[in-house]
Length: 393
Ligand SMILES: Cc1ncc(COP(=O)(O)O)c(C=O)c1O
Image (cartoon, rainbow, N blue to C red; front, side):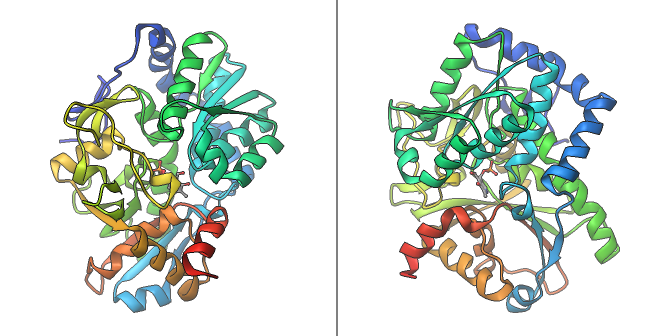
């Protein structure tokens, strides 16, 4: 059994491409060409070169000695926070901008919630001299002002999404609408392993550089390529897909996915999709999503804007349903405490999304000789205000 996508674009029961007819030509063009383009030697050369010289890869695999001691196990941190722009998101935007160029597109659109994917997209568009339009919910524009300023400085146009709840889901709807209206010259850079096939697979492949590096780095440090566990937070699921990728079909490597429980899974203010979600369709993909009894999408909540999404990518829905992945949900309070703890124990300020992954060690116990690799998906600079308010700093 494989946990990778099949040739029809499904992970088990999940995935596919549920799109309006008007989008079909765009998605079909991408689907029929993405694998060939990614396998071209010139594509791989340019992608690898930019990841090295522009993004700063490989990112270190750091043995967190004091953190490990506290939790009596061996914890390694994969330092995606040290990527240019401060998170793993840029691995995907570098890949997709090169894809867009080979498809002959000269205009880029993207959606963003926290602004991290918007910044990563605006960055690569500046790098390539390509026009960039980022859709962002009106509410997110207000609460993520520094990232809005960064996108503007990088030359992007930020368009407010004023419909619905005026957050990420609505920004995604606006971006899809734009794509329908501009099918010939525009490429839509989706920011996670969500959306219609081939996006989940394409984004996972771009992010798979993370586990590719971990294998080499663990071989050097531990004399074996495989850890006992890989751990990541899951919003849409792209940093998780990146660190799981080369271990998906190696069943001896445990896969742990950490979701945002917000104020508590059953409080009505949560984004714990595996616990609360049912099968449904969101943004072109069949997956698990939070919805009312009559199928309306429920408003998610998390203190971290990057985990504040009502669904997960189809890869993760399948990992959950098959039992291959162990899903744990972590509240705002637990995550914030874990974020502060990493500052004190290791001198690293993590993004609040990442802090969710770190929080599991309080309750999920490991053996002393287990090697546990946590994806440190991003740095906490963007979250300083939230940390300040939460801890009265
Ligand atoms: C630092 C960081 N980690 C994780 C996420 C969640 O996204 P994903 O699940 O696609 O990795 C985000 C999203 O903005 C992020 O900024």
